[in-house]
Amino acid sequence: MINDCKPLLCSILPIYLDGIRRSMKIAQRLNSIPMSGIRKMFDLASPDSINLGLGEPDLSPPESAIEGMCKASKDGLNKYGPTAGIMPLRDAVAKHYSRYSPIEGKNVMITPSGSSALLEVTQAMIDPGDEVLVPSPGFVIYGPHAVLAGGKDVYYKLTDGTFQPDIDDIQSKITKNTTMLVVNNPCNPTGGTLSEESFKALCDISADKGITIMADEVYDSFVYEGKHISFLSQLDKAVVVGGFSKMMAVTGWRMGFVISNEKVMDDLIKMQYHVCASPNMPAMYGILNALPTIDDYIVKARETFRKRRDLIVKRINEIDGMEIIPPKGAFYAFPSFDYDISSADFAMELVKAGLICTPGSAFGPYGEGHLRFSYAADESKIDKGMDILSETAKRIRRK
Ligand SMILES: Cc1ncc(COP(=O)(O)O)c(C=O)c1O
Image 1 (cartoon, rainbow, N blue to C red):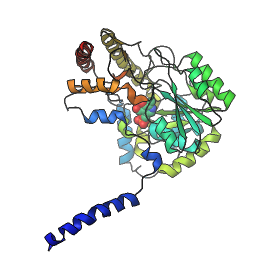
Image 2: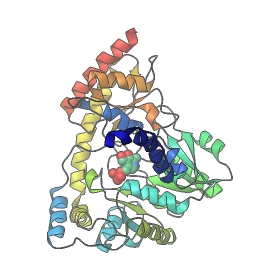
Image 3: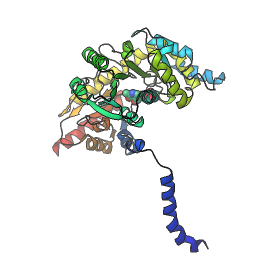
Image 4: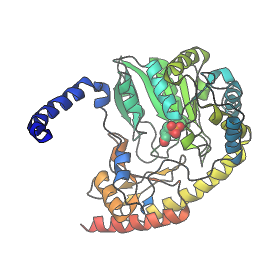
């Protein structure tokens, strides 16, 4: 009987599946966004590869953070919390950042990650048709977030070498629809930090044209030379996103924050209510237990990363045809190369040879000609990875 029905089933099934597919329509906004090139690269790697592709610290979180989270959970703090996060943590974040500006707890909202803070700010501030200026090479989610809000992603260049926002390029891309400019300082993937001059130029553009700056400062703990220049001093024109993922090596906890003036904050809290009701309660208590005394931990982590940065920069600059100016922040090296190969093909050759990194082309239209290496990995891994890079580069040069 079943066999008799087989031809019928075979002819009906595709029509049925096609119907389901069509009835479960995916939004065009999402369809227009490609999958991240970074993930694709990881999927192709063998398990024993050296992984310099990951954007997360390999350090352990502060013990006090873990204890605080476990205690909160054991004490029964497992229910929904206040939408903007628990007040003592909002106050502690304000205190930690008071070195840049006299902010208060009411200026801070705790979010379920820096990523979701970026999405919530974009959703709260972008209307269909608005244009968002996004850095390239830059972190991969800003452009898609603009598109998901119905806006348009417009990419501006970072300059070669020290990767400052190219002010002329920004000016030339501003239209009457430009409402937001994204700045990432310190920057992923370049490791660049904003100069005083760039900071002033961006503030002037924002003031002259009435463009809001969304400043992503999740790597503010990792500046190796000079001082971090924060948009926290400019809350009349900027909304600042930060996070604990990198600061405390708790990428899996999904904890971030946003800081804004009080007027904008009301709207951000409204947005967050409709996104998640409230952030993770035990994790907030964990962060709260560590944040007031976090400076020693950060100093040690920064020193660890600085040594690794010096090692990777030295090894890269020893390779013929590769070049890097020492990056001043975050934990990424973004060297340029002068070979006749695309960054995607170069990265693929490296994956085959046992080293995972990310091609510059994954970071928008101006990332080509570079590779990104994360040095949030121990020195022996960095050394082995650089041996593979050196050999592969030699092979590519000979071709
Ligand atoms: C520049 C930048 N911003 C934001 C984030 C988001 O971090 P999280 O969502 O872990 O807080 C990342 C993560 O890699 C990043 O590199």
